[in-house]
Each structure stands twice: as structure tokens, then as C-alpha cells.
Image: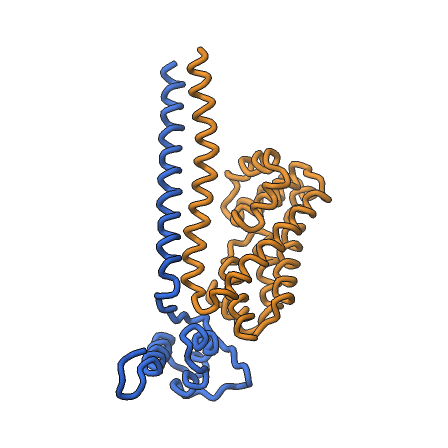
Length: 199
Length: 114
């Protein structure tokens, strides 16, 4: 299916990009980073307009995120659990909900583009946790526009090395995720050792 | 007390694993980034002929000609899979033909490869 989505963006441009990023933002796992890089490469080839691409990608993502937030806020726990289960995340949703409450705005911002696989679950969790909508919208717009601008610009710069760039970004995302886990675990370890020393 | 230490040990091991993961993925990203300009872009079925031409610095007309296709419009952005379907040919055959055309374009007549 990924091949067909990439072909659709390559052939139909920004409108296809808009549709796909909207669906992905609701929670369907799709290769959005690669699609944005491909869009950047197409801009470099003169097949797409830079501002049009950033606008469509940003607008689609924000629309999908808002739908996710609305489902979380007004859909009720049953709908949220069903949606999470549909994409195999039923067990991890409470954990994401706790993280969304703890991280707040910066957490929303970072999961729009740097840790984007967590984005749809943070949307749902922000809704169920009752995170204020105007704050969610602010961080959402900021994060999605950042993401679209960063990945499209990278794709534009490395327009003839799309797959290689995607591989680099994949490793870099894992490195950042592992670093964040290391920071959290390191902090927990330090707290445990201090408690043990105090006893 | 024993249970607490076992948990602390588990957190410590997970911490070391996360640090190792950070270095492994950062090293891989760095190594790939250093060679990003040296490696050839693979041809994929979702790519259009102009996209492949751009990635390999070859005129799109050369690739269209090589696979015997007249572009349907000025910017024919049909994917390789779409073209293969239209021509009733297997996708791997078309990709191989495009790769041969790219290799031939990179090698000037009677000379060494670029």
C-alpha cells in the first residue's frame, strides 16, 4: 500500500499529500516522513510549489490531529479503546495518556514531528485527559508546520537521495527515542540509588 | 530489600541498553549520512520516470525512450508500476531496463564511466 500512496503523491501532488497526512494523523500508520521528503524532492524538480506543499501537509495533519483530539474528548472511553484496539495500541494508550498529561505542550509539539509515531495516541490521550483545546491547537499548529517545513526542506535539499535520506532519518529518530528513554531511566536510576543511600 | 535491588538492577540494565541503542543508531545515522552522496538511489516501483531521471541526473526523455514510452503529457508522472501495467510488462523487467539506460547514459561512447 505504501508504494501506491507514494505513487499517488508523485502523480497527483499536494491534494494527495493532504488526504494521506489527514488519514495518518487520525492514527493509520503510514510513511508520512517519506511522503514529505518525496514532496520536497518534487519541489526541487519543479513539480510542486513549496508553500502549497507545506500548507497542504500542515493543514491535513492539523485536521487529522483535531479529529483525534475530538474523538478522545467527546467520543467516550469505549470509542477511544475501540480505535486504539483497531490499530493495535489498546494496551499502550493509558501509558501515552499519562505521558501526555506529564509532558503537556512540549510533548504535543515534539510528537508532531520528531517522535511522530506517538502523535495520534497523544491526540486521543490529550482529548480524554481534558487538555485545554486552545493550547492543544497552538502546539499542534506549531509542531505540524515545523514537521512539514523540516522534512520538505530536507527532501528539497537531498532531492536526488530520497531513500538514503529516509534511512538516515529513520536511524536518527531511533537514536533520539533511545536517548529520551535513557534520560528517563537514568533519572529513575539516580532517584532509586539516592533513596537506597538515604535508608 | 532484595526486590528493590532487583528492580534497581533491571532499571540499570535498561538504562545501559538505551545508551547502547542511542550510540548504535546515532553511529548508523552518521555513517549513512557521510555516504549519502556516494550511494546510488535504488529504483522503486512507486517512482515516476522524471523522478528517477532527477535522482540519477539523466534526461527523462532518455529513460522514456529506453522503455519505449511516449510521455502522455508534458509532465508524465505515472509510476513505474502504472507504466508497467499499461505496457502489460512485469515491473522488475521495466526497472532493469531503466537501470541499463541509466548505466549507459553514465558511460560515454567508447569512454570510461563518469
